[in-house]
Length: 442
Image (cartoon, rainbow, N blue to C red):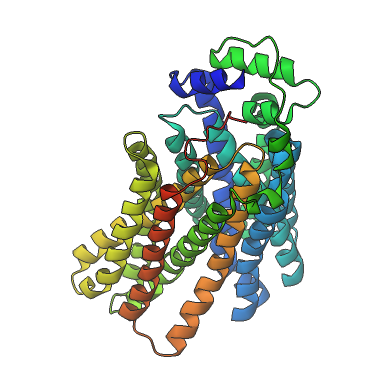
């Protein structure tokens, strides 16, 4: 009887409760965006106070990313076993405690360890929040519901940078961690009382009180309650967890998803990390380089929302391929226009729209390939593999710069990563083993 539920949720208009769930996930990801990039906002002040070397600053900046990768790989999959809601509550607690403790750090080693802890919590949150937002959305708005989480991430990072710039001169860098930790932990009671468990998870796993919980949630979404729950398919339960990603039916898709995430994150972190510096190398002033970095983030807020809106009308995989190809083309040519400042800034803004939209599109596309028994595991591992690309990207770019590569050559190289990612997405949608999987199907 869960198939009629899936059909009803797909076709019905989004109700207030469904949008509330999407909004709660939006709030979580705004805080995550701030928590992840807080080290970038405070690095200069921390370095000045402690007299850090470049290697030590790099250690602090990378610790959070490493934690996120580990959290996505090894903590996020617990959501497919124990539920989306309890894992989100646990990981919010971990991230908030990590932020608060960071405000009291007394050494580089302690701060690095606490950034790793914070990253573990954030890595666990990301996949679950993206998935639960999609599982409560109808077919028309599902891609938007998921891509909005990337918008929240970029918005949280942008507002966090503005906030940090205002309070560090008077209150110091520790206050940024302190207020960030308090804000993160204040969301705990909000999520405890308002964030529901996923209906898809309850139908697939059927914990002890699943029937009453499912019917209570169905009433809130405007769907008629069911008299009994369908018996979970033995095959579905047997195929849950990490090993299911390598089953005969899913292996091809899993490898393509991993390739897509690695390539997109590899290119994304090059663009976001090196563009301000390389614009200066191409002849712009330092202030103009910083302006380019701001435009990339502003474009991201637009691009992540736009891809979701386009996916409400067009097939998501085709929209994502268009983003990837257009982004590759702009990356390949824009350095040649740095002599014209206005044109260069317009191109940087467009690249910000596209490169952030590519990430949001992958987040939105991946859950639909898998069933609810392995959906968070699949997205978590996709994100984790992507983080490996994110960590390698600055290292590869730095090595090539030391080898005297020119900015135009670097951008051409990383543009090719987005083209190969477009091929991976084309292969995903061409022969996906689960082309029409709904978040409630089991």
